[in-house]
Length: 119
Image (cartoon, rainbow, N blue to C red; front, side, top):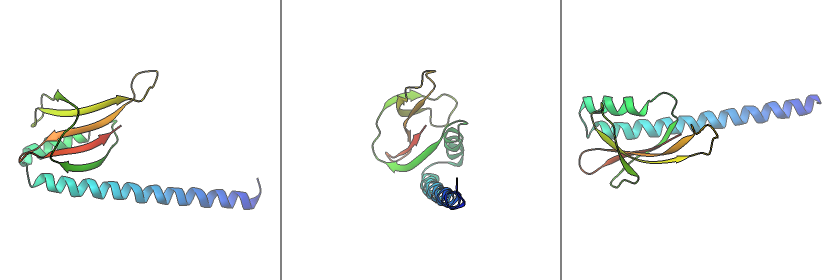
């Protein structure tokens, strides 16, 4: 590989890394804004339970929003302050069967739901 090709490849990779860093920064900002809105609706105990649920190890979560409707099926979540969620879960087709993604709606007061995507 020539020096010119190496330089172009490095430049492309650096541009990609910057674009991804910017993308993840925007997703994090969106999450913080929505969670701040949730904090105005729920008790500190319930907020802590929601944050613990969202931060489940191994899941990638994004696309947070407050909605007035939910989709999916009801799923009990014992041990949480909100007791249940609505979930629309899909399988990504991984042969091991451990490749799930979808949407979660956590019920909030005043007919609102915290909606987010997980994978």
